[in-house]
Length: 627
Ligand code: F6R
Image (cartoon, rainbow, N blue to C red):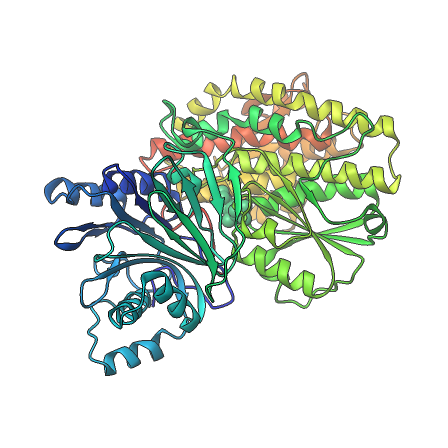
């Protein structure tokens, strides 16, 4: 199976692909582009260029460092055209042979692929019967050989690509070049993203604008089932039948510095520190003086939002936890019942959805297959879908009725940080907007929440300035085997997020619990010295605060070492905190925006101390495009 294989109905973008044609040294541009897309997969990397003697390929299993080493000992020739690929394996081993690019048997065509070709077995048998020999087990090679076969029959590369796409079943994005036509790349897109970078006298195709942001901010997003034929100075887009097709030009709003570490050891740490700005940008200009929220693309009339009788938030992982936080605020402000569901569960349990259900999906990448499948299912049932997304033009916003973009800028560290905070902020904007449309809050109440939201970037900054304490703490827990996190109300999803960060980065057993639930079983896990983080709600909200203080005492009585996150001036918790981290004063619903930050940093610091790769934790990829 393909290295980037997925089921037919899923989209696939777990690999990073890039092509370049222009006056620069192609393999240098390609490998640098792969480096910026390595977050998409790091099981193997490869590049190919066209030389006067034909196609030259270098590829290696493992991270790009391995390809760098190969290129250092066996450099690629300097040419003006090349393609490259970085892979996240789903099926089949991450071997040198299975790495992309793949080359047709006659050596004429090189091709990179992102997706699964479902009917690859039939096509492979057909090609074998014609005498074509295969050198890998991948379905990708079938596309390379098929393209080679059609081109060998006399077809032009773009015509051949269209003919091949019509024969492929499944999901795929392909980029190919022909050794006999060394100034041209042809790419095809079905489902997973493909953008064209338009430079001066040079052209790029890539999965992500980060791959070419150093050279141009002018980009064109391709639509579904399109083929693009590019040279250094021309770009022609058609559908799979050769008809001219519309594509969507856009300007990238961020620059190279956003895609670089800027002196930080990890992208993740940089992204943690970017959170005040990311939240501020997400809130910026959203409300008109009349109080109306500006959605980026809205195709849901207010009358329909007034008739909504149920909200279902659907997302995965960290985005799901952002949805859990949002539920508290949305129900409180709108009085509409709000469910939150993990996307992969939602799709397959026959959820009750109608035309008056509003489905809100949350996705940083905008490409998560589970979430996308949930959207398709919801829309089939006539529900309206609003996407909260960080990636302009990604598949999820394209397939939704409306979108609110989080303006976090590119999130490159595999573990989501600024993605989470901005998702919470965007959900709150949506909640306030619904409350306004439906009249469940007074204008001055909405303005008061907005004003407090607007002050959170400063509060997050305050937290960032006190993180040294967390770094010291991480050093203390380097040999710890298990960590628990407790919270109530919105503090509960914060606890879950703290545990997830620790699992994915420090490879530790970590679990988050509702603080009140512990005594129903999990408290049996607590033994002498078990570290337990507790998120304490602000004082004075019902009995929430006092209940959590009691929960801290319960675990402490059983030997736990308590690391308490509590607001400034909360002296009631002091006697029960072995370690006390102070949070700035905010209201209960906004506390996740400040309380999550130290937990992110704890995981980052602990993983760093343990010598793990924080930006590319094992087994993970940034865009999860398999179901
Ligand atoms: C955890 C993490 C993942 C993602 C999840 C959803 O740090 O990053 O749990 O949150 O895979 O991804 P998106 O938001 O791209 O849909």
